[in-house]
Image 1 (cartoon, one colour):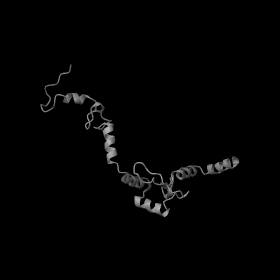
Image 2: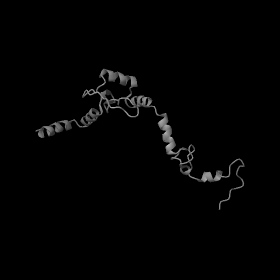
Image 3: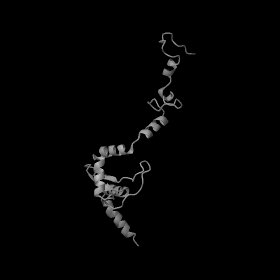
Image 4: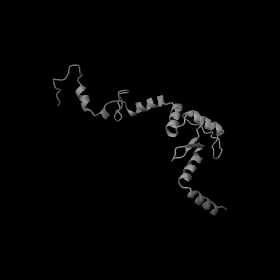
Length: 153
């Protein structure tokens, strides 16, 4: 049985010493009090996720991603989209798929040179994938064309 030392400050509750012995991860969430805390935080993972979902702003996040990854603003992106007529620069297909989070049309991908970081144009997801494959290995295109010609009927 553990005895509480008599030299504890009188303003501390009786469970003060016991709470210091419980590892932080096993202490209850300070928001809901039901689940154990997540890692070093004072809230559990469920409470953290609820707050994150409530405070998420897709438009602000989109602007941040464009600036951080491509050094362009949302206005620059919109100007490029208008110049391209709202369509992919390679295939010319207009994207009509709706993003379930924002309720808006899914944005075109920002194509850029990976070595220089220079933004080229806006492409649909399929064209972005193909450009990425070709950019890494241009000889593969010739092998693919040869393969397709060999199997054409």
